[in-house]
Length: 202
Ligand code: FES
Ligand code: FES
Image 1 (cartoon, protein in one colour):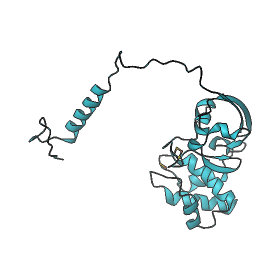
Image 2 (cartoon, rainbow, N blue to C red):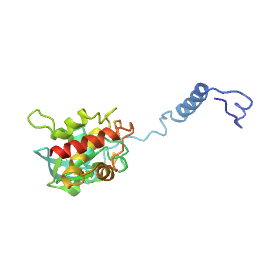
Image 3 (cartoon, helix red, strand yellow):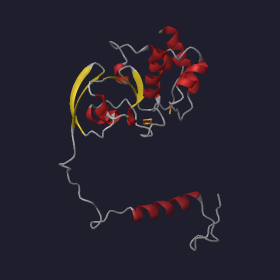
Image 4 (tube, rainbow, N blue to C red):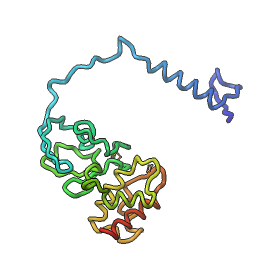
């Protein structure tokens, strides 16, 4: 593709996408070089406040010393090693981080862990039972409810919540009550079919 530009270096020159990319990457690399004079030293913040928290995650109780600014998502992934819950946008817009807290579905990236001392949390890792998939996990397989799979843990946890709330009585209702869960691959027909199927079995 040919682009016109007012840059003195590029004017009257035909620039390919590849050349433009090289120029951009080069500029970013130059401005991003670390400098001994500007790099900030890493100093442990001894004065940072801490909070002690009790959480039961997938039936296992944990007592944790955390930074009170940590989200449930970061506690799950970084402290407990439960990386099944995904960090998509980290700002409440995609639903990839959905888990159940005391039976209610929440976006864990926007939920402070310190505000849920004593909570019962269920994540995708806790859905199977004695090696058998949860009916909704199986339904996602049966209905091709995924492509890349990144949104899938959040979709499934949201679907479990949607069914238990009684909001899965029709495809239209499922679409409405699952609308906070975004799938960039567009696997929505399979997702809706899977939730409808599991709701029928539940
Ligand atoms: Fe939490 Fe997107 S990662 S809503
Ligand atoms: Fe890829 Fe949903 S399966 S984002």
